[in-house]
Every structure is written in C-alpha cells, then in structure tokens.
Length: 277
Length: 277
Ligand SMILES: O=c1ccn([C@@H]2O[C@H](COP(=O)(O)OP(=O)(O)O)[C@@H](O)[C@H]2O)c(=O)[nH]1
Ligand SMILES: O=c1ccn([C@@H]2O[C@H](COP(=O)(O)OP(=O)(O)O)[C@@H](O)[C@H]2O)c(=O)[nH]1
Ligand SMILES: [Mn+2]
Ligand SMILES: [Mn+2]
Image (cartoon, rainbow over the protein chains, first blue to last red):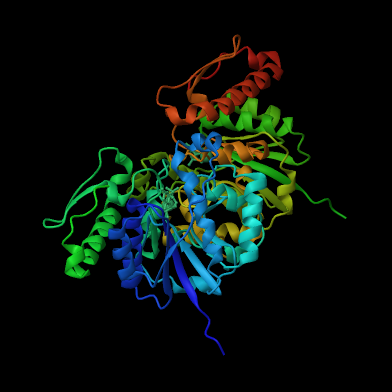
C-alpha cells in the first residue's frame, strides 16, 4: 500500500517573497509539522535564495510565472503586483500529494496546524474585507490536474473580479459562504487583522488561539529594519499607527525566526550579506 | 388556529438613536415588509420622538435601561457608550412573536429581507473585525422568557468580553462559527464595510446584492449635515476619506429617506424643528 503524502505549499516569484517563504518554512519546522514542505519558485528567484530555500523545504519546484495582466481590476485595490499570484494555480499540479495546504509567503505559523489535512477542498478562512469571500492566503485543497485545467480555463474565460487569485478562487469555489461549515477554517488559522474598526476585545479574547499570522497588504515584515544583535525593530514609517501595538509583536517574532534560521544555515550561506529588499 | 406573528425589532435609548430607528422603520416600510415593526425605547426618548416613532412602528415599547457598567473592557474599543446596548436583551421578552429579527438603529434596509424569518436562532452575519464573531447589529432570534433569563444570568456571571452586547451574545451563542452554515447570514444582510484593507473589487462585485447597510462606529448618518432643499450632504470632517466614495451614497440615501419620512408626518409633527443631535 502506497503511503499517503501530504504537503504544505508556498510560492515565491522573487527574492523578496523568497525571504518570506524561507521564514514560513522554518516556522513550520519549529512547530514540528510531520508533513512535507514544498516551495514553488519562478526563474527570478536568485541562486542565493534557492540555496537557502533548499535548506528548509523538501521540494523546491520551478514553475512558469502566470500573470492575469488585468490592469483594470488590479488598480481598484491599488496593488498592481497581485496578478502574479495567479501563479499560485500551479499548486494544483502537485499530484504526488493527496491533500495539500497552500500558505502565502507572507504568513507565519506559530502553532501546529497539521489538523488542517482533515478538511475538504476548498477550506479557507473568511476575508476581513468582505467576509463572505475567503482569504486565499491559506487554503486546503486537493491536487489534481483536472482541477488545475478547469480553473485555468475558468480564469481565461471569466477573469478574476479582483485581478488576482482571491477573486478567481472565490468565483470558482463560489459556494464556500453557504454550503459547508467544515470548509470554514477558524480565523485563527489565517489571522489578517488589519481592519480599521479594530476589534481589540476579540483579539484579547482569542489571541491565545492564533496559529497563523498573515501579513496582508503592501507592507511585509521584511520591509522593516531589524538589528539582529540588539533585537531592535525599526518599523517602516508607513506602518499604520493603529496596528502597531499588536502586529509589532508578530513582526518581531518573524524577524527572530529569520535570524535564528539564517544562523542555522551552513556558514558559506550565512556569511553572504542579506539581499537588499 | 392562531396566526404566527413575526416582527422586526430595534432599540433607541435616546433621541439620537430614535432618529435612526425612525429612518430604519421607514426603510422597512419602503421595501414593503409584511411583518410587524417594534421599537424598544427607554425613558430618555422625548415625547417628540415617541410621537414620530408611533407613526411608523406598530409597537413602541418602553423598557428599562440595562448597562454593563464594565468600563475596563469598553475602553479597549474606545466606545464607552456601548454598555447601554445590553438593553437589547429585552428583545427576547417579546414572546407574542414566534420569530423576530433585531436590527440596530444605525442600520438602513434597502431591499426586502422578509426571508430572514426562515432562519434559526441565532443567525447573524460575520463581523469584519473578527469574522469568527458575528456582528450583533442584525440577528434572527426566537423570543423566549427562558432564553432572556438565561442570557441575563450568563451576562451577570461572565460579563462580556467587549463590555457590550456583541461580546456577550458571541460568548453565549458560541458555536455560531462552527456548527451550522444556515445561521450565517450573507454579509449583504449586514454590510459593515469600514475595513482599512478596503476590498473594493468585492464591493463592486457584490454591491447589487446589498440589502442592509450598517453604519457601525462612532460616526452615524445623523452626525452629518444635510440640506433637504438642495439635497446637499455636508460630511462630518471626521469621516474617513477612504470610506467616502462608497459610504457617502448610503448616507445620502439615509437622509433622503429621513426627509421623505418627515414630510409624510402629519403637519403638527413635521413643523417642529428637528432635534439638535
Ligand atoms: O510578487 C509576488 C507577489 C506575490 N507572490 C506570492 O503570492 C502571495 C500573495 O500575495 P501577497 O501575500 O503579497 O498578497 P496579500 O496577502 O497582501 O493580499 C504571496 O504571499 C506570495 O506567495 C509572489 O510570489 N510574488
Ligand atoms: O446610546 C445608545 C447606544 C446604542 N443604542 C442601540 O444599540 C445599538 C448598537 O449600538 P451602535 O449601533 O452605536 O454600535 P455599533 O454598531 O457602532 O458597534 C444601536 O444601533 C441602538 O439600537 C442605543 O439605543 N443607545
Ligand atoms: Mn499574503
Ligand atoms: Mn450599530
């Protein structure tokens, strides 16, 4: 009987996101996942970062970039860079796995989430912007060439209402909000708390349950400055004030994992100066 | 066979919220609801406003104020006024109705929502701040003295994690996020889009389905200035810029309904100058 393989999968199309993927992979090792780790990369990721990724991921797989090129819709979000996230669709082609969990490269895992593999396709957590849509930064799915081809065909025919993977996947898996409560992951599995109506009491009440922090938006943890000797975090000035007291802790945590992970690398890698982002 | 009675219920503990309730009641009449309209008021609501409310609601019911007095938690939200919302609990005492829908006085109904009465207790839409909590501005419930007493006892024993009714009701109906998808109202039945991560594409995609707009936060429609002769809306300067293009339309709609509703009142009422809020 062949063993059932399951994997956590992420994506990096450039070195910036490769840093994110590197930290994410290490954060998954820290919580002692028993599943395989896969990172999809495109040609743009430099040799230096491929090398780093190979130290933490079981599989580093080169894929073709896939761009929605749909400028009109992306402008609505003020995020012309999201088109590239359609490259995510390649994750369905990992058919050596019977079940997989996709995680954005800007997520950080702080608690074991191996229980996600009991969930059906497509399971995801609500998006805070429009909570009848799921956030596509964390989702459980079933690799399948057939599904891959169907979604690609769907994308080519209908596009994506936000020009990125979230609009596309929500339109494709369009019964998520109404059909099966088991496909609703707890918000603590994809905590994207950047809401203006800051619901601080809920955060206090539920923060102990948070398992995955997702740094959505244009400003990522790697856009801040961190002094690895003093542990001092120098926040990017664009960082919204309202978010600071809470998110700062997680940005700090991200940098601590980054530093520890780099220290664990064989010296010929860690001696190289970090990529300027 | 006795007829099954069902009602929409709201609450106003002062004249400011009574204006909201007045507009809400009229907005429900505009969409031709077939259900009864009930407003709970406290002693503070002036004669003038009680009179207005009686013109649109079938029942204007005086109840005792009920305050959480839980300053510590409320300060977290920067909203010391929310304690009063525990007065909402009185809605469970309306046992002449077999099913009811509670609506905050700061909601505006723009499409018929009578289908809500097929939903079980407790049905509500996700809160954008923490979407595994429901927003308690719109909920379907079953009036019952037993439930009323149980929730009051629960409130006295455990308090509320946010000091208001939302924290309390989420703790009491604490399987909402995980147990029955039918208790998840579409977000379009309680659209509280004030999120910082403005998901404009979803709004574009789904705005045609919006049935209830909920003006959450400290700034309510009645805090803006409106010239009923020119139809010009003069927005309160605290109104966040990012929200303007979209929410402004709904604030305008609120004022149009307000103006039309006041015009429909018998002249001895409409001749009185509006209450300064
Ligand atoms: O230039 C890019 C943009 C995105 N991504 C991948 O696509 C995901 C989704 O994009 P992002 O996280 O920036 O979007 P957000 O979560 O902020 O909406 C990232 O986490 C990466 O895995 C990438 O590899 N290169
Ligand atoms: O001083 C108050 C505060 C609140 N309310 C009622 O409680 C509801 C909830 O409060 P609010 O809508 O201000 O809270 P938000 O939705 O902004 O969180 C209101 O809509 C009113 O029905 C009231 O009658 N008097
Ligand atoms: Mn992301
Ligand atoms: Mn409200």
